[in-house]
Image (cartoon, rainbow, N blue to C red; front, side, top):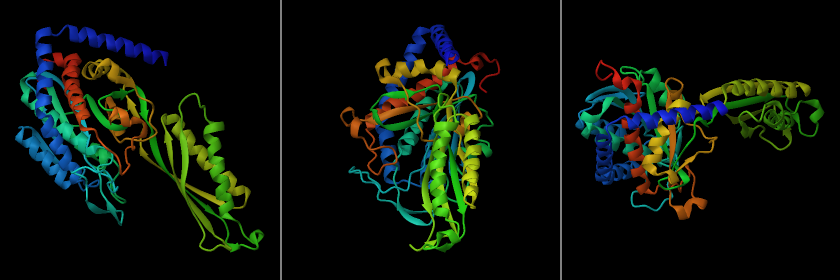
Length: 447
């Protein structure tokens, strides 16, 4: 922890020195231009956001959204690639000065949630999700993410001659997960080459967040959001009459013991001072009649962790605990764990380098250190490949913070004026990172 603090202080100092070496007049005029252009495009950004909100699409089905994005980027004169990971869109802007390749990412998919917010552009969309008819809503703010990044692309295109290097705009489908039986999201985009030709040296992303005051930014270096794994345990016993349990093996009792046993992994078997972790059993199914002990019970759950070494320990101990408890009663345990998203880990050096930008844009009083989130984000897949920084933007009016409906709620509400802060933050991150990057002095033109 002490070493991380030293890194943060050192790189923040580099930021101050680096920006101080830039011509003050041109730097100030550029920042003024960004502010003016951001304000000018704000109403257009909100129109896009409301349109996407009223017409949400589920993961891997974002055909209308991606078509609107692609058309916008083409009108700006960007090189545009479509059909990546089904509906993903990538726009490439080559600046007028030599410099690094920087990526910005926004997610486009909505959730199978029926909207309960009373706004004129509320979603009335119905669709099918994994075989069930569902309402569809942008209950996590991806409509706002997409609209903000479209606006960033327009501002940077208008300032193209001042842009150092290349900016890669990644509009990603299926962040919330692909439908059953399909691949999707960041992992599939990476498989299909989104981080190649050209290869970014850094990537930035933001997420709007309920329960944080509008316009405030929060972030943290290092582990920020948890890794998530899918857990299934099948306890196999032997069916018998409920009046004669001794003539069989009761998988319901064994399953109950396993659930309790799993809770001792965090509390008694792992170093709790290193990183937190969670094992949750969310479903338990077994039996069809009150007086029949069933043959088996199936449980499913989720595992959350921040450290890869601890993650592997948890997996091993879940299997061991389940197996030993089951064997003690003559039953057996079939444990299946599937990794879903890695932990979202902000690169220490990149976060320290760029945190002064966020402070300048939002104001020192409006930037705080984020708490670790046990939710997950597939932005983490990009961070496994290149340095990345992921931060949060508050979108709840101050007087509503204490009772705000959370992300993924049917009552999730976005206070739209906050989006201007996100727009300015992403745009300024591009210019500031390029100015501070070693790649800026490259003699080979834009990369």
